Image 1 (cartoon, rainbow, N blue to C red):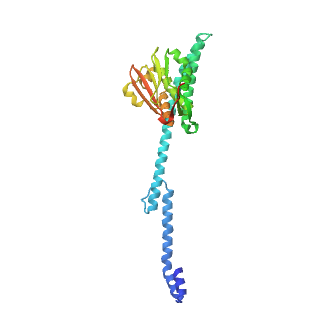
Image 2 (cartoon, helix red, strand yellow):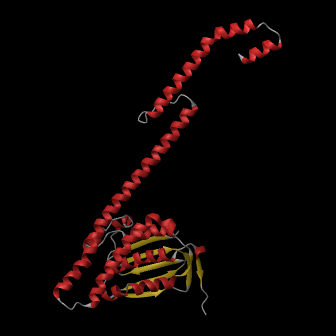
Image 3 (cartoon, one colour):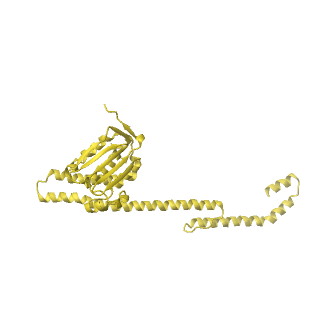
Length: 303
């Protein structure tokens, strides 16, 4: 109507014609405006009602519904993951509480039986408690893993020796001999978390090794091997050994297993860009392989 008014003015057409056009189309313009308002209010009402989904009319509505459904699906998946993690954490805390009661009970029995308690046995039980506490804390830290990484070149053999020294009490108690065959090699990794990974694997080997046997720690082709001569794992349980809370027959027989050691080891290996594999045979032992990327391995020249 504004354009017509301009044209009528330019061509000196009588304005009464423009006025008639405006007068006769005014009702149609008002009706169109009212229809648009009602239509938009109806769409807004459907948007507010989050429990209903309406058939999309326009491309914008269709795209909006797809984006909304995608966000809903992501949130549902996130909630399900959080619930699963919470249930895992509950199960782990229950198992951990049962496991840590064993050394505490032994300490209480020692203190009741004699006024002079053997320092060696006290040390064994306190180190067992310390190991379980560290496992629980590492499980908790794993949730915020990315903020606790610092990659540097570290001497692999020094980490292995440090772990053997840390668990010397258990090597002596179980009469197990550590055999370290790690050549001079450096790996690019986070030293603290690599040590945590190896501690879980080596302590697991200690618990299930036969008395008066050996635990071999070898380096071959960018792979660290931890080989024990323990009870082994039945073939039917091998696919589930890295599941959180899975103890298997050995854990049920031992009655002091949370089933979280290998799970933690695998989760840490993923974060450090390592591959963790395990093979085992019943009554023959277990071999754990930790494969390092070739570009993260540096051999030290021997003098």
